Amino acid sequence: MNNQYLISVDLGGTKILSALIDSKAQIVYRYKIPTEMSKGKNGLVISIAESISKVLSDNHLYENDIRAVCLGVPGTVNPSSGIIGNAPNLGIKNFNIKEALAKFISIPILIENDVNLAGLGIKKNEFKDAVKNMLVVAIGTGIGGALFFDGKIYRGSSFYAGEIGHMLVEPKGKLSSKSKSASFESAASRTAMVKEIQSEIRKGKKSILSEFKSPSKPIKSKNLQLAIKKKDTVAVKHVTKASKTIGTILGSITTLLNLDTIVLCGGVIEALDDFMMPIINKSFKKAVLEEPGKSVKVVATKLGDDAALYGGIALADEFLGN
Image (cartoon, rainbow, N blue to C red; front, side, top):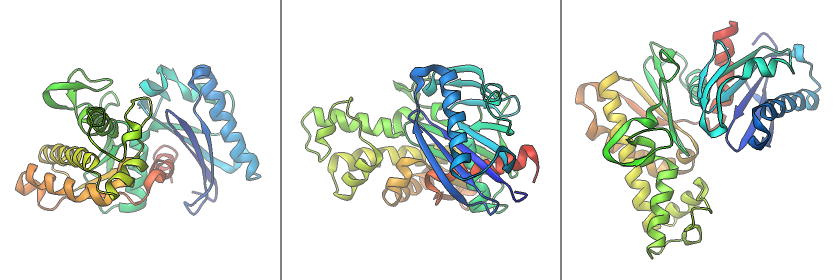
């Protein structure tokens, strides 16, 4: 990193997390603020710029100490132009956030889809050159993916590669926020698990999650973790069902793409790794063809929520050189 620092910004629907990464690729400082979309996209840009200024001032640094600002966005992104094509959770379409942010800071600005950025972080920090054809899958509010072929990230013709959450799972069923058919994320995301659990509770099923029976009171990953730990039958049923679906879909994808590694990440996986991964692996082995599936590793990342932050290093290497 040429003895300079890097700032990674993970832009989410509820929070903006900024991190300072030093020349040894260590996160040395974090700063988090809520995402306030009520202020509009220009207000969002100002919030990001103010976060970056806070990182600099708190660490007694100047803009010329920073190699790049790397921004992860939950939506389709053109990393070369800096344009966000569509970010539904932020209510943003066709917006050049790179140009907008450049009005406030003179540091090189790089942007990427948040799951792609997590994938870049996972590959660089956990696998390096040990894998060639890899899929990273983020399980959370929705489901997203990042694809790597021959060791390089694959973004697709219009930057939609990896959007596996909107793959068709059932001929008929519930819609995801963007799909026109029953989708992977409408069947196996945390949102899907929570809807099924809340539905059963409202029908009178006993559960330690009964206080969350209203959709207005969300069940978070930590709540699911506690319910699974206490062997809550309603939670166990629906987390198991989702895990089986995840394994089946990943098996089909591996048969198609002949992957060597699949890495799962996201809040649900971080909270429920020990429970979900054995079920996912068992379902995966049943679904995948024997030859392409026999040597595939299906594992959970060890980086947790930091994966996207570390991805900034790989993104800077790609666009600015080592």
